[in-house]
Length: 387
Ligand SMILES: [Zn+2]
Image (tube, rainbow, N blue to C red; front, side, top):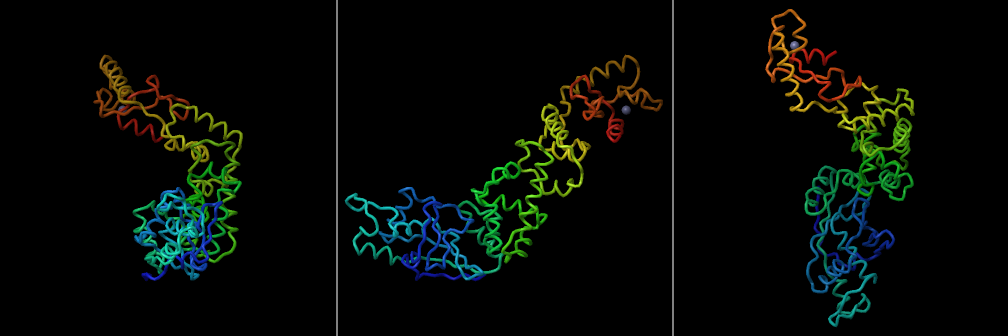
């Protein structure tokens, strides 16, 4: 990575061709069109509060430094503001007469209302700018380092900057656009904020099977996002086709993986949703997020549901009762040992040598309450569990 320190650029240079989008609250371009002030991965302009924006202008008027600004030089020869967007947008808006500051008589003054000397002072203020250009990994490290102070950029925001180009632009127009009519539906399935690129990240993760960077690199100069879009919509259509409703726990599931694993199986939509409802009402299911894959997989893997287990006070009570009765009969307190003729037929196991077992398995309708609990020696419990 190469860095270059620029100390001769002035506020006037950066304000040359300054474009501010009032509607979207974004400073867009400056420096004669060479500078992208708010790349998509940046937060919106938040200094327009009559305090922070005014403070920027007052700093310039007093000759205070504005602090370091960081630009990244992109492959296309443009520059993007990495850090300093709020400060630049503030002075840009002031010079373009978007807000006023109070003068020494407490009178609000727009830029052209200031005396000539003050106007010149602002326009001629020199800025300290670091420009960085280089390999993606280095820039990524640098992004991370300088963002420690602010809200850190997430991986997708960084990758969007590194792989910026027609593909990223088209992908963002689809997946990072809050005005996209499909966004609300998508967010029933995907957790995150489209403005922080989290919907896009998920879409890329699905189509690339997790190899987001490689995919972005390979498609960097594509002008179309057909494959990304088609795959994403296929997954969403499949999920909404199999599950005939929306539950909170469906948001954030690994739909891409579920689609790859299960989409060739036939499912009856009505029957599937009836099972979802039934499992939601089953008080023994502790992990509702697991319900969906449990059903997709044919209701075999109960570990997905984290079914409630017996609590110690329940198992201790069952142990005491079972042991007392066994001692009276002179047989083992493990009912399965007691049936046999081996050496353990009369053995009284200690509490910690036994495990709780559902007499009737949960999957066959057995409940997790004391009437359905028996203590078995560890060997027998393991043998039963494997059946
Ligand atoms: Zn036993």
